[in-house]
Length: 330
Length: 208
Image 1 (tube, each protein chain N blue to C red):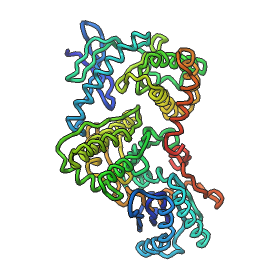
Image 2: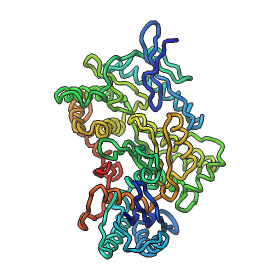
Image 3: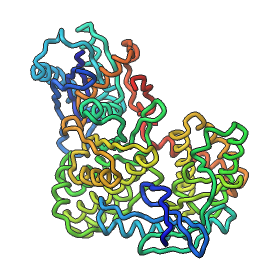
Image 4: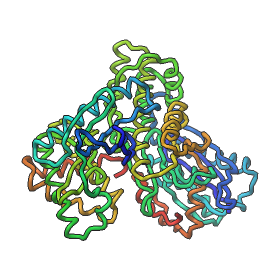
């Protein structure tokens, strides 16, 4: 079975095509076009306009890369939420159009769950992980328990990526700031104490962000501030992930989301896993960030478990929570 | 001590059964984490050890059942305290009958209110951190606690339990209302404001 997935929750419009071979996910293509604002953050309408402009091209590119014909597609999947309304609507409209035109079934999927399932689908020994999902808007610790993917810990205010981007804007970096902050952090030497805010298994970043901005304004070097931000936030993320693993007695940890590309975060989580005799998995980068392949794959998994969706069920849900998904395939 | 036995390895600490002046005790030993830098690790371990010991002491003064403290070692992050024999509430919560569970929730709520009346915030109220012993609920692990008078922290404290019940005891998660019922009986402040605060926190979570 071949599934085409359309991802458009936020800054990127992405199309992935995947195939199921013995319950493993084979990625045939995974193309992405990301919206880069001229200044500031992501304006939802501007991002949606960008997606509308490029979605057809990205579909064409992805088809070409996969070397398949439209008649080979068995299912059209799309990200139904959570995300920015205008962006979600654009991706959903593209999916509905494609589904009607090709006369193929359609499947709306939860974006956060897709980040987890792509790990299980593409990594052979990854079976029942705790997912540390770190992106711009989302920061969640997700695991499977009692028939659902449940959120065991999450940010109480802003996502970690958002925190990095906001600090980036303070020092004049364009979106996304994470990769540049990582470079600066490597040169940082002095640790500047920052608020380390964990409540149970939840986490908060806004106080830390303000404190970091103050350090910068008071003349601390950008390298030292970036180093301190990374060390503090990533240690807290690793700690809540470890707490979830201990509580649930799970022996696998999976990384997902754009911030998972950060080598320091990966290193910390790997170290934590090693200490607890657990295994740490990270999908390759193009499957970590928002991508179409994960949407295609989750749609396929859901379809094969017997789930069907009518056109009238394909309305988007900006606040689609991870634990709202009935996981009938596990 | 040569008769030490590891009884639980949590994410943060090792719980070791040991003896102290010929008493059976529990040692909570916070483990160094190699994934985080020394500057953060040392501060977290010593401040959490100190804060936890202080909170246990203050909770006891308010009549909340907690272990008795015997020794506090800040440098190595070790608290030595009495051993509470009983069942973890997490393990029995879904198996006891409805009436008992309701009474248990009310008792839990009353105790949380006693803590909150004195601005003691537990910081990690989950059913894993409560032991039912001799029909009394003992609160353990004040490791993420603090002293804070703000309604916000009390709300977050209760919200942590609500979420823990939703994830760990999803079938009986509605019993959280009995926790609030017990809380209301003991709480000196305005219960409406606490309930409103919890609602706000729920809404503030992403995508609610």
